[in-house]
Image (tube, rainbow, N blue to C red; front, top):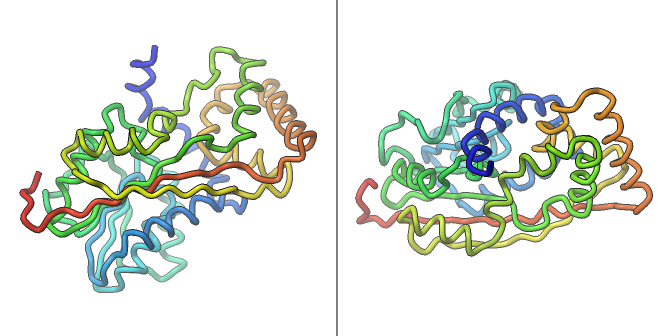
Amino acid sequence: MKANILENVQARAVFTYNAAADFYDTSPLSFWDYFGRRTIELASLRIGSRVLDVCCGTGASALPAAEAVGPMGNVIGVDLAKELLELARTKATQRNLANIEFKVGDMLSMRFPVASFDAVLCVFGIFFVPDMATAVSELWSRIRPGGKLAVTTWGPNLFEPANDAFWCSIKDVRPDLYKGFNPWDRIDDQASLRKIFNEAGVASPKIAAENRLHPIKSAEDWWTIVLGSGFRGTIEQLNLADQQKVKEANLAFIRDEKISAVETNVFYALATKPQTANFK
């Protein structure tokens, strides 16, 4: 069963995040933009750089990357979720960014030449492929000597304590869907992240942890997060009556337990390609 889930995880991610697009950029989900900008800050992109952002979503990291590299630089954002890319294009237009473009694509079947980017980014996306080491190797191959790879992934206890309450509410109505889509749990500690980089032939990445609490101003805020995140794919598989039961259970939990924040812990991995590196 687990193997089948991993094989289908990309298709499920496309379904999930296309469905989540209507809530993805709402204020209760401001963590997307926060961590996207933090990734760009840590990557220290140079003016004039050529940047590839895979699993770019609505541009949380791609847009600040375009701002960082300036008009002489260029950013290409790639994602499989067309609905998210439409939102990204709209935001780029609103910000008058002419140095960025967005394409539908898969990180494992990219047609970009090797060693053609000064930096490659992947924020909250590496866990959507069955073989993460192969994915990191693919990304690494697109980087020029002296260039950078930045991978950001979720840390432990994502969205707790509300996460556990959500899955318990799912188990009550559809036990078969219980924790059926949470691929980020495959890589939620520094050791597993470092192992993937090493298996990909990327030695000694710098890994930094950021433990952060994301504010929940109301029970409805939590439900908005559910609808604008990876939980959405599970919600879409429920009938309307069960959706309402799950919603009521989640709202009641937040109110009864007086939850005012959820955990959004992350790991940032950054590697620089040696100047003498080959293009692999």
